[in-house]
Length: 191
Image 1: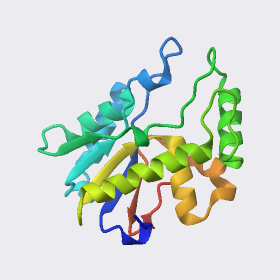
Image 2 (image 1 turned 180 degrees about the horizontal axis):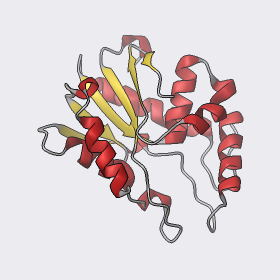
Image 3 (image 1 turned 60 degrees about the vertical axis):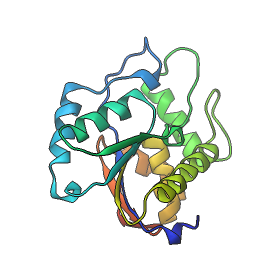
Image 4 (image 1 turned 45 degrees about the vertical axis):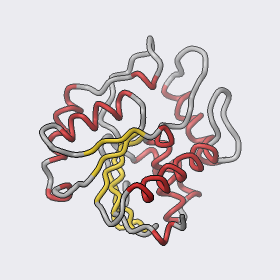
């Protein structure tokens, strides 16, 4: 499906703040109690008054963000693995500096992958395929997509032709930042 043919308004939301836990895989990390409260506050904002469906990654932090956002709402929720974060499997935990270096390398050279990591290009292709599926699932609806920092940065940078500053944009991305895309055009930037 051509991005220009999209008729849905898709609100892309980065998951809430997570608890750093080097003893568990990053895909199993939970959101913090502060993240839970801020998600509930965000859900009450006027911008999200009319959401017809929520599609999210399979990762625990995204699922918990969705559950907090949708609390008390009668809204359909769907998980799509294509919205998962860039795959990162490496031995041991990385220091903050090592992690940022790998993210920078991934976003600067999208076709290469850091050791144990999926390439940025592969993650972006998977993410775009998931967005296309969402646009086939819904027609002329307001959809909330809950996903992750690296893939959201890559996606918005492609749409805005900002690939050359992707790492800088990722560095500015905060928990629960959101953006709006309609017809393949960014109406509200995520950063």
